[in-house]
Each structure stands twice: as C-alpha cells, then as structure tokens.
View 1 (cartoon, rainbow, N blue to C red):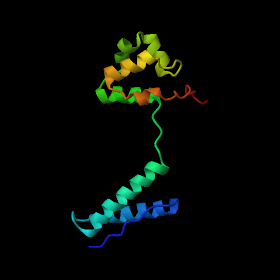
View 2 (cartoon, rainbow, N blue to C red):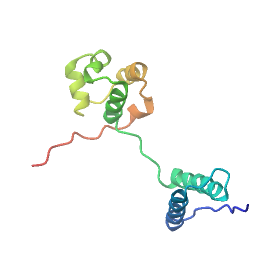
View 3 (cartoon, one colour):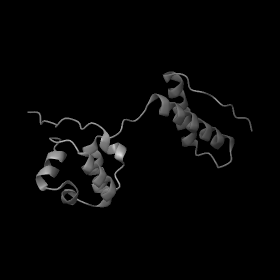
View 4 (cartoon, helix red, strand yellow):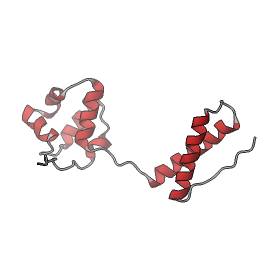
Amino acid sequence: MRITVDTIESERGYKRALAEIETLVDQDPRHGSAAAARLDVLGAIVAAYEQEHCPIAPPDPVDAILFHLNRLGEDESALIRVMGSRTRVWEILNRRRPLSLGMIRNLHASFGIPVTSLLGPVEPARRASL
C-alpha cells in the first residue's frame, strides 16, 4: 500500500482535495484499505488548511446564550436569576445593553457558556425591514 502525502497550498488545491474526499466517501472504503487511509490523510490535510485559511469567528454573545439555553432545555426566564431583572434580560437579548463582567461570570458558572463566547462584540440590534 502506497500513499503519498500532499499539502494544500491554494484554494484550487483545497477544492481538488474536497472533490477527492467526496469521491472516496461515495466509494464507502473498507477500514484498513488504501482508500480509507487516503481518506484519513486527506481529511487531516483539509482540516489543517481550513484551520489556517478558514477560521470560524466566535459567536455573537447573545447567540451563544440562546444556544446554550436551548441546549439545556431552559427558557429566557432562567436568565433573570443571573442578570437581575426581566428588563435587563430583555435589554441583553435585544442587544440594547452589553454584558457586564459579573453577568459573564454568572452565565459561565450557571450555564457553562464558555467565557470566550461571551466576550465578543454584540451585533447591533437587528431591525425589521419593511
């Protein structure tokens, strides 16, 4: 079994690697086969390229809060004990007020939301278009 290790140095190479991965996945290679090994190698190379060239921005803090509440099966009323009042929760969720350091600490401790997800800038309030 011979497998060559490639590097991806351009967008064109990246697209070719993705196309080859798709072809290999469609073939449903057996574990231990040359095709399965090639798929593993290509997957690692593509992941390294994406990490360097396609970084994922951290989520908006409000989106992170809502995601974690949903994940835990909680609703927005669970935030009142962390943020202090229904009005303050409304202001945060409607992007009218930034999170304070105390709120960030409480959200992390109470819901396990990563601090890095809560530190980013809040997107401006979204306005409905007419």
